[in-house]
Length: 478
Image (cartoon, rainbow, N blue to C red; front, side):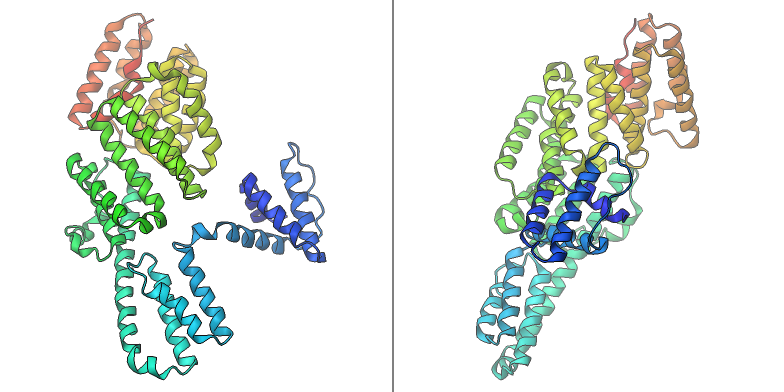
């Protein structure tokens, strides 16, 4: 049986399965269609079994079933796949009209795309102009070729210039996001950005509204990275203003719109009170849930981030776990429901923050389960969260009095620090402090001394934003 078919079937949501089943059933009158429906239902039942024995016998060609499912999923999600499905639909209509010989009617459809205000979907505009020129040649439109051909050729050149400009900013934004995902948001300066410093220095280098959004997103990221929060907020407000002036652009790039709100929230967490940030996040969640633009995985990831992850981050960062114990169950359940839609970065952050919250609330078994997930995933995603999770794991075993396991984990932690540079400067001295604490768990002085040392080192290394996520700081004498 095809592995790619099994992987695709396992990824399907309940609504996707229902859509595929209904379509296959509707068009199952022919033998081939009937066989595809039979095989889809058979495989769905087979994969749902707890104990799968030998693979079932299928009636149709596996490759044909695989591509049929892909085609149906495309129909289901085409409004989300295209930046502007309406423009794409107009182009397709014009192609049919030209094919049937209705030249003038086909032109009317294309002109709606070509001369439609600001270009949000540059490629569709380019496709429409190219089709316009080809149609004029095919139908021998001499008037157009003599009077408008050069004009639209120049327009095509201008749109292409805007398209490649936006593509350049988009590639820079990809480099920036890659850095934050594989390393650490406040890590070393990315050398790949050096050659882009000139284009990022002046907004006039961004030709269209789409490029300007990337320009401000990138500069906001770099400002946050250098701890210049007022400058970062200025750039994020510029993004909000562009989206406000261009609502269609906001609809086409709703994920960027949500990410901008997310970045604003992160800055507010460091400049406003817990209550102010919590009210802001709740208002965002209410607005987004009432105005759903998409059901795509990326949209679900962004909604989860605003509705759960940032609220949880706000709680932990402001040491408000004790006041929000009842919310942990909701956060945990939301993570379970959305787990397959959440990006690795957000997923490992959720694992750690939930594990840390359970640790502070005293539910050590749940804390251990979540932190083990964080450790496993953070090895390849986030260096900072990996080290925070390893510390949390040690503290959980200390509180559970798992003496033998604690010693094993401690030795493993020590070895991991010898293989790579510690993320936090205090980690190199962790063992001498923990040794004293483990040998004298009833002496609060050793825990107090360790806490003061951690805060001092965080201050020196400019990493105080982590101070409320260091599990060692919450150890208590027994």
